[in-house]
Picture 1 (tube, rainbow, N blue to C red):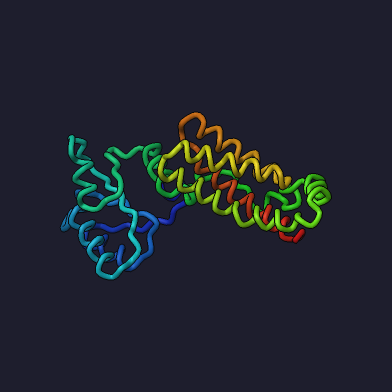
Picture 2 (cartoon, rainbow, N blue to C red):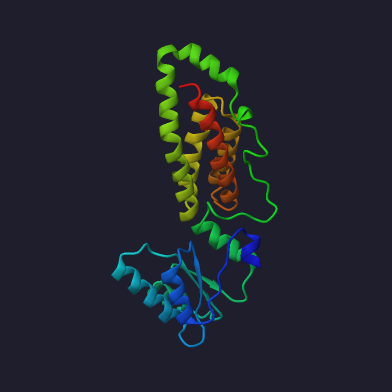
Amino acid sequence: NMLARMGFEVDVAHDGFEAVEAAKGGRYRAILMDCQMPGMDGFEATRRIRGWEKTTKADRSLIIAVTANTMEGDRERCLKAGMDDYIAKPIKRAVVAEILEKWLPDNLHEEGEEEMTEENHSGKESVDLAILDELQDLMEEGFADLLKTYLRDSPQRLMDIRDAIKAGDAEMLRGAAHTLKSSSANMGALLLSELAKKLEMLGREGTTKGAARLFNQALAEYKLVKEVLKTRL
C-alpha cells in the first residue's frame, strides 16, 4: 500500500526463488529485496539475478536491500552481494521515499499530488507569446535556429537534472537548473523557468530533497512548451 500510494505498481514474491523468477520475467524499475526471505535469502537471490543479467546481457535491475540488521558492515555486505542501496527495518515511509527519489526521480508521485498535465494546464499558457514575438522581431532570420537550439538542448538539461537528483549532487542540480531557467525565460516559457528556478534554489541550498516532484512538473511543462514552439518553426 505504501508503494502504491507513491504511484508504483507492485508485485510480491514470497521467497527468494519467486524473486529470481520474477526478476527474469518482468521489467521492474526497482526490486526491494528482503534479505531474510525463506527458502533462499535476499543475498543469494541478488547474486543469481546479477549472474543472469551478466549471462543474458540484460539491463541491470535496481535492487534495494531491506533488512532488519543494522549492525556495522551490513550495508557493505548488501552492496557486495550486488544490491544498489539499503533500507533498514522497521520501514519508514519517509526513508523509502527518499531512497526511491534518489534512484527513480522521474517515477515518484505521491498520491493526490497535482501534476502539470495537458488536462489541467493549457499549452498556450506555457509560453508568453508577446515575449516570443519580440524575440522573433529581434532575431529575424536567426529566430528559427534559436528555437531549434533550445529544443535540442533543453531535453539534455532535463536529463542532467534527473541524473543530479539520482546522484544526490546538489551542485550539478544547481548548474543544470540555472541553464534551463535562463534559456526558458528567453523563450517566454516562464512557468518552466520558474520551476527550474526552484530546482536551482534547492541546489544552492545544498540539497536535492524534494527535487523529484519539481522535476516531474518541469518535464511535463517542457512537453507543452515544445508543442507551442514547434508551431513557430
